[in-house]
Image (cartoon, rainbow, N blue to C red):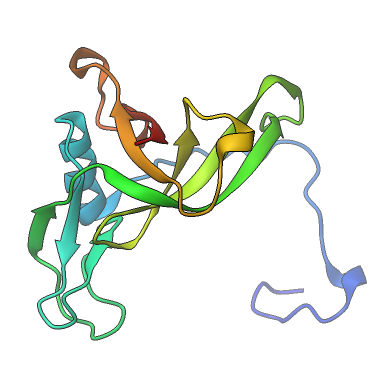
Length: 156
């Protein structure tokens, strides 16, 4: 069956057994690159829409509401609130973790959107939706220009 034909029945699905010999490189894009470079400096940047006045985090190059080009970069601080969270008890391979990890969607104050990241310095019984948090950055010499330059968000 050619790739352009639509699969309508489960028995039409094909499986690939074994390894797929593919290498790829992920790029963060124009907005992502500037955002990650700022993280390396210990800053969180967003972009502001000139029409809607939303500040987007993570940054993007156009507004999804009015399609305006987003070119005004603003430093937005490091404080926000937990929008939702989950507790991880296994790693990506399904192996049990020695200690559960908490991952949350954090909305940084004044922004539209949010960052999915680890929470730290908080116990599960202290955790709630709306919990004020702040970013904890790695020491300057350890930063690489990665989202993991933020170690975690802690109550604040």
